[in-house]
Length: 149
Image 1 (spheres, one colour):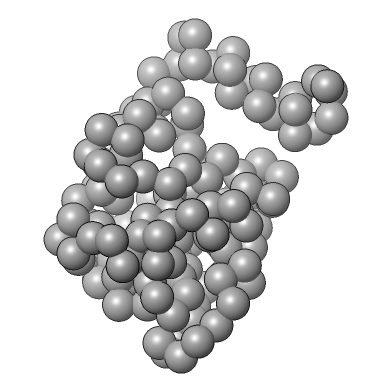
Image 2 (cartoon, rainbow, N blue to C red):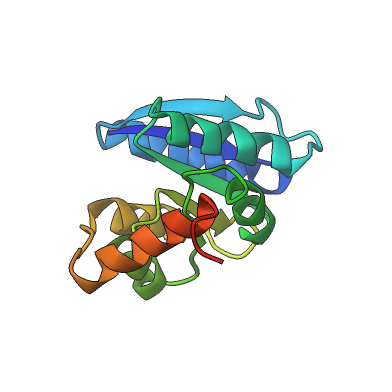
């Protein structure tokens, strides 16, 4: 799987650890930055990951900021992105199984590195259940395209 990975300064250490773990797991990873832990604006990197996923240049995206919230908000402004903030193994699995999230956003200041890696692993391994959830994803897409008010 090809994964776009980005962070802000608060998530830089977590992003660096995830980059190594994802590559060890055999994934192709596109690191959109930043390249240092210096202060940056998270919307820039959330947009880069979101655009990579929405355009098909990446299959999935992972974002790491302090809480995961700001990056998810920014990424969700990109048409075709379904970014989910997760905080537990259960929410990581549900983001994939029920919401078909194509971008995962995690809080680098909230979890130790091993937990960040575990949340991403669960999300990547959990299949979308389809069924009743597929219709809901179709409605989200219709909302995004302005076809539902």
